[in-house]
Image (cartoon, rainbow, N blue to C red; front, side, top):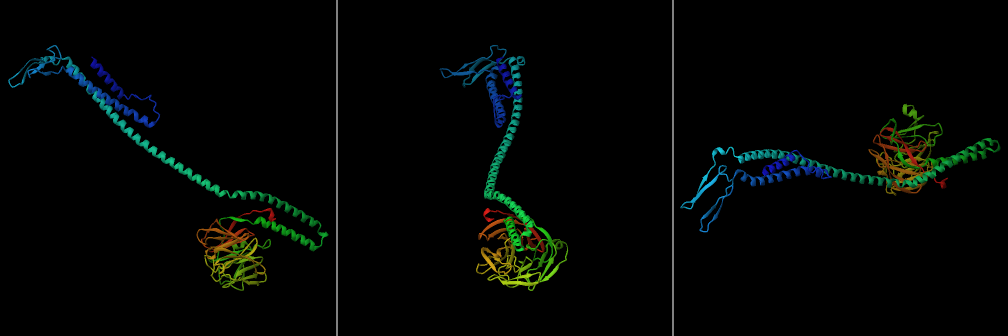
Length: 521
């Protein structure tokens, strides 16, 4: 009975394992990976331990159950074998018995065995126990097979789970590394932006001071208005000349104030506004920045050489919508596209020469001409696009300018301030920028701005300041809509750039940043 109880306990233990009892349910594992791996491995260990216990028990118990015992032969003192027979059951009817034994002449053992009756085998109690035990062993074998299948399934699940966990760990490391890289990039971008904005701090401080000066200008204008009102009331108390002098003085003060407010550093150029598509690939068009109020005439010159006719349109609206114009014939053909209209006259470079001509539209005659000494001409030092653009005349808030190149300056750009009445050079500046490398150029507030090309992607990248005789490289985007600019001039009255772009007449608005100091008033 003790053996049966032991087998029953072992079988119960195996059934508990097959039912999936969680032996490590309260072990307190914290990590998902350890929890997933521990239960199947523990089951496998229990199965192997149970099978070892069953094998050990069967090897010790089965011989006694079937009635077998060992017969020990010992050597007699005379050299012959002595027999000692151990009889397992005492009842001769229940098992095999050795009746007698002898030794023949050749030394072989002869044993007489009494076998139990055949009718007793089927009713043998140990045989029944053995049969029952075999059935239990078969059941246990089946249970072990089921457990083995479940264990194999758990092992596959664990392997799959392990692969997924490794994949998650890899993705987590990738995400962590990517996050670190993104943080580093963002930090560098923010640091670069701070370094870029740092120079603006003193500019903002100056801007605050400028705001106070603007308020002072407003008060000054109000004072001027009061003075004008007083003059109007006292007009009979002064003679005409004294009154005219006072009015001229006030106008000069007001003009100086407005000029300081208007001037500034170029910081931006708008998208182009196409006014009209007319003429050939090269040409120039302009308005007069010193035209009186109500005079909105537009001047149009097609081509860059061997042409003498200038079209006059009454207004910008007429230029945009109609072909009603007046034609003026010049006494000489012009060269390039650097012509300007200034205070009722047109200034242009005479074809195949370095002579500048001032032509008065009112009298239809030349009022002044002068040779620009040492200036290259006839495509010697032209802009990058060619077109006899050796001498470029410009106008800004300060007056009339000529931009050209000389042999003495190694083909680099020379800037000259001209007297608009006599065409004499008032002052010149030499730069280090080759004129042939410039796409186009224009003057704003005494600063020459140069573009890096005339076709494709274009930007303003060089500036020379005549007030300090210094230069700098800048980066101001400039949209070249029609891919070939042959004329680019600034109009201080409109605060706009006039451009001739591949047969299109185009306007650009500009943004100027001005800093006004009290010592300049």
